[in-house]
Amino acid sequence: MVRLRFVSSSLAERTTLKDLAKQFEEDFAPEHYRGAAWERKLSQLVSRLGSYSLAAITPTVIGKKYRDERLKDKDSRYKEDPATAPCVSPATVKGEIDLLSKMLDVAVKEFGIALPAGNPVANVRKPKGATARDRRLTGDEWDALVVQCTASGNPWLLAAVTLSVETAMRQGELLQLEWRMIDKKRRIAFLLNPEMIKTGEPRAVPLSSKAMAALDGLPKAIKGKVIPLGRMTLYKAFERACDRAAIGHDLRHEALSRLAERGDFTVLEMAAVSGHKTLQMLKRYTHLQAEKLATKLG
Image 1 (cartoon, rainbow, N blue to C red):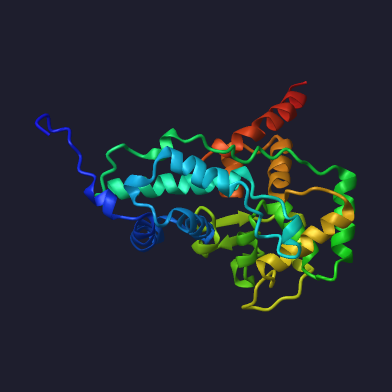
Image 2 (image 1 turned 120 degrees about the vertical axis):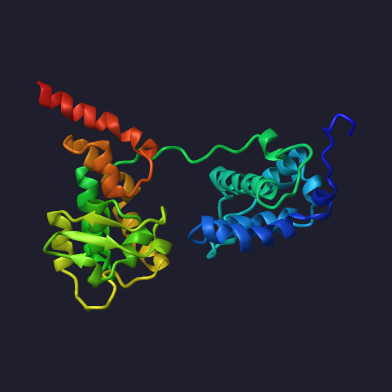
């Protein structure tokens, strides 16, 4: 104390993680987070660590009480047969621990709650995150997927798949589209609802000839949705079509790979199409551009 290095832990001892979560949810998250993913992560953290005071949340508590036990949980998305459901992925648990780290940083910087030992997450080994997507569709696989989407009982599935590949839109972005957001003359789709956009920023998406053809084949209502489906309805219909075609899938990765392979799109132009706020996520596609440009060089 004489050396002015003493940091009182009294507030951290009086504040539980549940208390912090409530304050984080009310005062910080609405301005910094969109969608519901963070709420699910927060719920998991509170369910296991909510009764702990912030001072009592040590690296050991996070590593053993949270990380190790959470990795044994069954994935709750598999509701039909929970007994055979796989465990939650390491990437899921890593995302939850990352949110815990963010909350503790906010506690110090925004809410004035000192953590005498610093942020304990810094000394915790995190599970590995998701690996980069490398799965591509061959020509035959794409043809098989088109056949199964056409045969689906869902009349919007084929158009949704085509638009996804032609525009690189995320699912939430595609499902927010209304006909009033489509400018056919300029061949642009306007994404206007920031709550349905991962980056939170409205943007204009260029439409290719194939995308325009897919739109022309759909029934129209002036104020209606282009793809009037719920998120899980579309996902399940797509998943069943992929199962019947016996293929894996990642349409956004496929769309970006196709753009990169053209060789005439710069990384900045790809970002304008895909809606990436930074170029870091697009770096992995630059080798595809280089291969195409090398062919042009002769």
